[in-house]
Image (cartoon, rainbow, N blue to C red):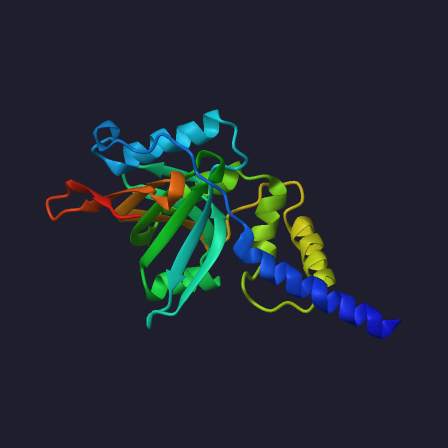
Length: 229
């Protein structure tokens, strides 16, 4: 019986792995007309982000953030965008986390947004700098109290003995700040990625997708061009 179960599991796993190459979806859209795009890619991002919001996509601010060490070893993770303006794109994290340490070593990073229901993707590359302490304080103070407590509890990316040790630390921090506001810890705050390159991707039939790239010029203007899919 045990042998039969092992064999069944083996073939089920093998078939799932074989299925990966069979997933396919045709992207039918009206595509991108360069003449309709804004001259500033941050303004264009705002239009696409609004479209995602208007279509009630789940968590349209979900993004993939890529960082790298000083010698170019990359890492990535899913995060939430928490703001954008003429400076760039803002997110918050533990400064002592892996991503925080990598951004200290190498300030160049990349973001990717995928709104699959709209067949749209935006890629952003640029340099990252910490935002002001006032901006970090303002956002931290807007967070739910439980999230504020977690910022104190978590030594992000560091090994932890078990779940129970985290929960005990939550109790300790809650007692420490009982009856008073939770201040922002010094090791937690925001970063802003200032773009030097942005690419807008629209899925189209037969994999002939539209890709429009904006590149920042020396005079701080944006050069726009179409890329091959």
